[in-house]
Image (cartoon, rainbow, N blue to C red; front, side, top):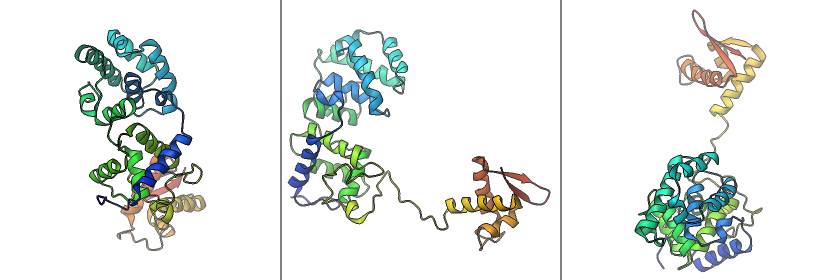
Length: 304
């Protein structure tokens, strides 16, 4: 068995079975998960780009009521498709145009039959690698392992996979059971969506990978999209709070009077001096918490 990056368990069968059983026992219900119609799945994938899934459901149903298949969409006036997109706040209108163009390609170039592989699906206008793979997986069970931000977070936390695209691709591909891209990709994305979010819900969501998970074992839930929280002591957040607290007591102070009350090591020309403090109070001024007055000799800071 090929050695993989990170700390992937040797018993991959158990890892696969645990995730699939967890997903099949209970998962969020979305109508596009109940179909293997490639057109319906393509519409859901394009609509879901940067749009919350809960908002997509009604729009997806209404879209399919109006244009139930690729032939109907291809025959539509593109301006009507764009107007629908705008009315339902589905993001960039270009996506509606791409979807309309792709429908025409399916009718004209594919005789109304959908391409089935990720490579073929990428020939459709506006369909990139991720969307092509998703449609191939969910419509034809013929996709590769999906690797999106949620999947990267899951793999990084669970198996300490390094933050490297090639490593994520390798591990995701090795973990996916042969010929089961439909259920596997749904399952691992569900895991990232309900159990391994930026704020994890390991126990509440019954994460099936807890017994192998490095993050669950160590308590370190950082990930590529979840940076380590900086220490509060000595942090900019702490210093901002001190400025506000000091001004709450004194109301207004010159910069060099404020400085030593914020940091005992304040030195006007030092590392934590006027330049550092000025940047701090300017941030607070931008937030509407303080005002900065430029006097004849020195800046004065006031609490708003």
